[in-house]
Length: 113
Image 1 (cartoon, helix red, strand yellow):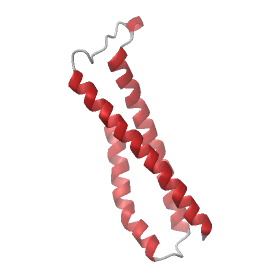
Image 2 (tube, one colour):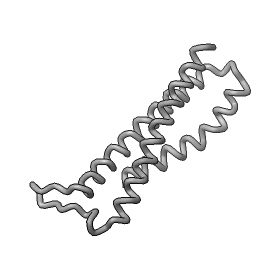
Image 3 (cartoon, rainbow, N blue to C red):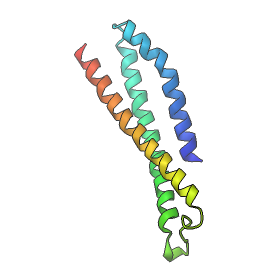
Image 4 (cartoon, rainbow, N blue to C red):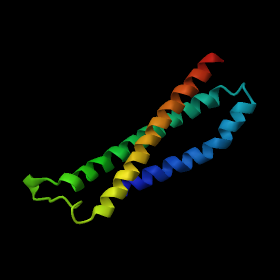
């Protein structure tokens, strides 16, 4: 649940920040709000990193289990679940990489002006 909620919050924020980013492209003098956008992007990066890491831990338990606590791997029984969860993790880690790139490019553009 945490993984889905965090991804939904991040997607909602990014959808809402598109008009503000377009405004910044048109008006080049809005420097303080650009810093705010970089800060909020960094917070979203933290959210998506925590959600993806928590989900990765659960997927690891689903694949391997934990013999000391008698948790057996469920991927042998529910292969479709494991394939879908691994695919969503790949997408989430890809979003993390794109957010890092976005923050770096935004900081470079802000420092040039």
